[in-house]
Image (spheres, rainbow, N blue to C red):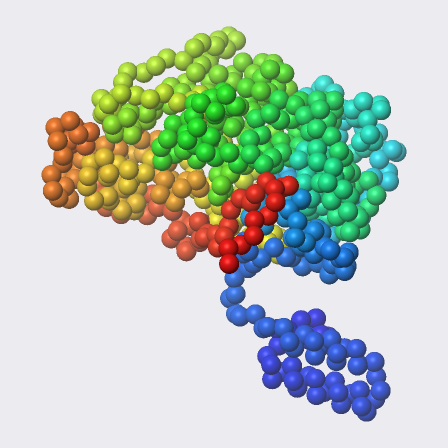
Length: 602
């Protein structure tokens, strides 16, 4: 019987021997073996997996599940995870973006980990149980009242960082005449504000257990029709995925604190949706937000970033992390207007976009601490040194209420060469909740087959877990060497020198060349001066006004030790774990839906 469960794992000779035995049984005993023989014969055509073969990568978007029914005429079927979507042939009205599979996989993993933490009934690890669980929750929602006020189980127990239990109404049902039909129930509600094909909503419905409903909204009538078509094609329970045609901003504005989870993944900037999105999330709820306008956030169009996000970006090695921190800053300031604040769980820079996962709480007292979480970035033009200046300070007094004061600009660093550019404000507090990241990492590892982009996710989360959470932005050894016009030290030697000097150092997920450290820049330059003494600059140091010459003219006050320190190195790299997985060919953003497809060149 064990052989029949996985015939494709047998060798070719063994399969042929089994087929001969089956044929003999069929001929002599007339037993019910023909169907089994036919199935085994078909399985013999499958390629036997190699020993030690890798798990599916980003380019493989399928996962184990039932086969798709035949598509209607003029459509083709695309499978991702357990979901199927219909794509109209030779059309770009609503398209499937394969490059965003990592985005959807991460969202699903974070959602499952979040619900396991705050909704005990959603702790079932079986993705196939989600449809029946959600159907039961939908059928019984009218009979399951929660304290008579329509709040969810998790939201009712939400605790903000100040340590006070939330006793206010944490989840509402919206207007009585709302077409969404939200009812008082104990399951979490999800809103996808810009759903397009509805693929993400369908994956949530089929792969995340215990959801009450997913509202898949879009302002495009063609997209809403595609959502309904795809939900019906996936044979989902009635009311689990609810297609809705409206402007996402108006929908969120009229449904204040109605959703436990809000997912925003716009084509471009999310800035116009942030204000209303932070109002529609229930207390303790989860907001997932993507920004793909990286040219704006990374400093190519700084004035546009200032108008959209209220912060001025700087062009530097750390620009992608700065983009993340600008988005978090914009979310926090938008939340503060409604006496709310955010708590980041996970913040990621992936390929051509940034994605943040934050919880939203209501607390007027906690909002007062927000300025102390912001900072301006001062970057020297000549040597690329930078330091942060906090916007506000919290003056803790023993036995007294905390006082709040403006930030203080420190003295200009001695090693800073040239004028200083000022960027920001940015979010300077930690971007990740490391305990939560470990929970997401465990979820992904425990269900590898359910994540088509497992290898990319595994590498990304591994890099995040190695980051220093309290060291904003990062530096690059190559940029330091470029300033000094010298051969750069290896990452291993540079990290070891920082470790021996008594400072912490780590890699970062936003750049394979980036290094995070709590060492001030005068220590960094001292290490580079010691390196240049041991490895002199070939061909001179440049003119007297050169930034590198000015830095090298000063004697180091620190004696750098470049002896290898294994405790300072990346454990994942030492163990051969891939952290920066290469993308497949032709991987990137697609044209906006609705634009005519260009014919390929002959």
